[in-house]
Image (cartoon, rainbow, N blue to C red):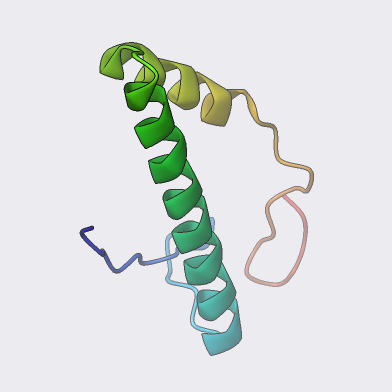
Length: 78
């Protein structure tokens, strides 16, 4: 399993610098990646099309709305 280092960015394009925030974001990313890997593997073992499984999960990600607004550098909601 290939691990990549994510650079988390604020709306203005600057990187998130808080160590605790980066740790939480990276943990969330890894947990979601592991769950998706298990779902992909299950689908293939059950005879599903790889292309369709990718499309369905991409559609799922694209359908999720953010609960909160983006914050500007001064903590104002965008």
